[in-house]
Length: 203
Image 1 (spheres, helix red, strand yellow):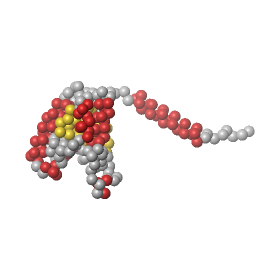
Image 2: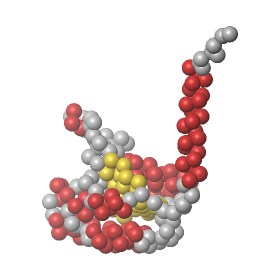
Image 3: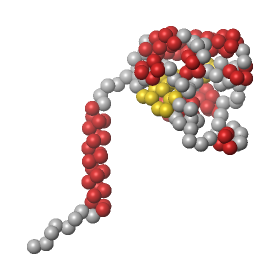
Image 4: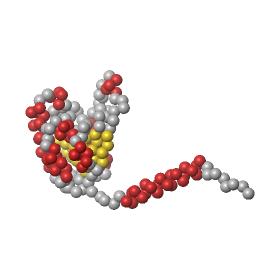
């Protein structure tokens, strides 16, 4: 009488993958709710805005309507804006650049308030499927915008509208409200090695 042969490595792999598939399928079957979600992309690493714009591009590629409110940045030529505006994405941009460049709090608050006024319209528009609030977290950290007003607008948006918030040091109230939170951490950054920001890669 001989012992039954042990499973080969290929057979073991197949068994593991089948078990994994069963777990994933069960989670997919359990996810039945359909509504707009709030995504926060925060942390000190590079790629938060890039990720947000990547999702906007994906949405537009599927025929969804998207809008962008861009805080802090705005003085550089934007590759994302050059592409997405041609595909129907509306942009509202502060156009003041980074706060350490302007060094003018009054001007920055005025610019942020104007963009926020347009943002509220997007957050109330049922025809817009996705709104990207790029670098919004800074506006709350610097108290350029009222936190309660921002939270209220996001909470009361159309039920199927998705919102993405990007920026460092996201306020805990937004983190608690969010459905998905991703934190980008800096392991290495080319700028720290003396390599300048480059067109098509960094903006």
